[in-house]
Length: 210
Image 1 (spheres, one colour):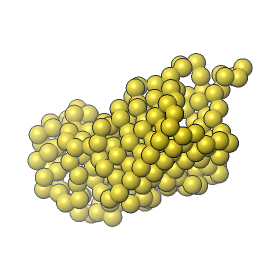
Image 2 (cartoon, one colour):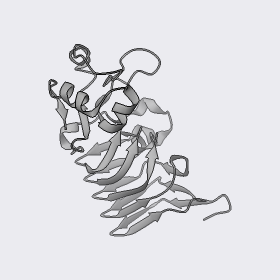
Image 3 (cartoon, helix red, strand yellow):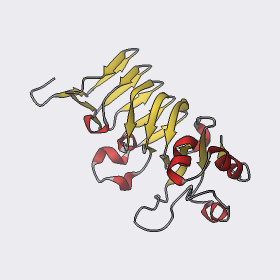
Image 4 (cartoon, one colour):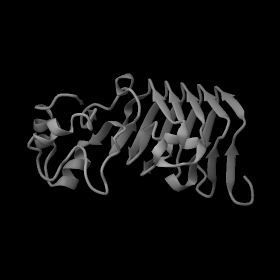
């Protein structure tokens, strides 16, 4: 750790190791020119203490020990064959070069990853093929191709104030959104409805994994 509290992993390849990113006083920076293969990464830091600068993760496991909130920087990473465990909310994955002009945001990638042991709420998957991904089962649920199916989704009578996708206004979801994963207990609380009402509406809808 340097005098600014930075712990930097870059310009190297790491294989079959366990990295514990848990020091609350540290700023962890992964990349550039970093490849991790078959590694386990234990994350117990807030989003502002974790920076990704085009690292490549291949067949790695992420154990998220502290809920990772509103973390868009996964779109600065390449993720292939990885497994996620723990709670993630408001996180974005995949290829979304419009998010930032910084060079490492131009190379985001996700394929063949497994989120079945994770709890995802408000997590989006950008510019990817979501059929290669495994998503959490109920009470988790995931809309595939929500932008392309926005008119169809609009016709469904959703309970409370719930809406699976926002296509207009300042907070609209980007056109490259290929999937969005949500967590029923949180959505029900947020939108003034119940898990049962949400599930009943979802069961009438095509293209939902739950």
